[in-house]
Image 1 (cartoon, rainbow, N blue to C red):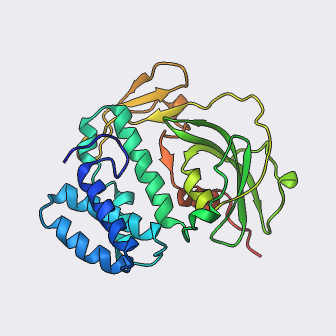
Image 2 (tube, rainbow, N blue to C red):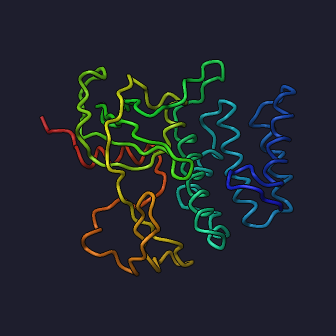
Amino acid sequence: MGTWGTGLFDDDLLSDFRDGFEELVANGEPPEQVLKGLLDQYQRNADQYGRTLLEIAAGVLLKSRGVNRHPMIDVAARHLKSGSGLDPWRERSHREYLSRQREYARLLGVLESPSIRRKSQRKRRPRVGDVLRMPLADGRYGYCHLLAFSREHGWLTNVLDFVTETPVDVGRVDLNSRLFAVHCAVDSAVESGRWSRIGSVPVAPFAYPRFLSSGLPDRDGNVLCWWLIEPGKAAVKLGSTVPDQYAGLETIGIVSPQVVEERILRARPAQMQ
C-alpha cells in the first residue's frame, strides 16, 4: 500500500476506496448501500491496519454525503478517539507522527459535527482575529479568539474565560480573558456550523505560549521523554518526567471542538439556582 502524505486518503488503498464510493454514489446509488458492498470488497484482502483505516474512511465518506446517523460513523469516531491505526506512524519522524495526529483530530471534528453543509453554502474560511461562539452542552455559550495559524500545528486558539447564558455580539465579549490556549481543529467546527463567527478583532502582540510534547510513546503508551516546545527555538529535552515549573503547560497537538467545549464546562460549571 503506497503512502505519500499524512492525510487519511494519501495512500493507494483509501484513495481507490474513496474514488469507487464517489463514482457509485454519483450514479445515483444510496451512500449506505454503496458503502456496504464496497467495504466488504476492500476489507476482504486487507490486514488489520488496512481494515481499521477503511472503517475510518467509511465513516468520513458517509458524513461527507450528508449521512449523519450510521453505525459506521460511530465506529470511525471510536477509532479516531482511541488512536487506532497510529502505531505504524510511531516509526516515522516525529513531525509526521504529529501531522497524522492532527489529521485524526480534524476528522473527529468532522464526524462529531451536527451536519455537513452543501458546498454552495460553505462558510468563509477562518482567519486570524476571528471571534467564534460555540454552544455548550448545558445551553450556555463559550467564546474563543483565533490568534495565529501555522501549517505545522494549525489554529492557536485563545479559549476565553467568558461564558454567557444567551448569545452576545462581539462587542460584549471579554477578549482579554484566557481560560486556556490550544491548537484546535477550527476549520471543521466553522464549516459545519458547530461554531459561529460573530466578528473579527485584530490580535494584539502576544507571547506565543510554550507547549509540552511527549515525543513518541512506547507501544504500551508510556512516555519515554518529554520535550519543551518554544516557537523559533530547538526543542528542549526534559526527561521522563515534567519539571514542576512546566507542569501547567498544555501538551502540543490539535484538539477537537468537542474537547474544547468539554473543558470549558469543567472549568466553568453552571451555577446552581
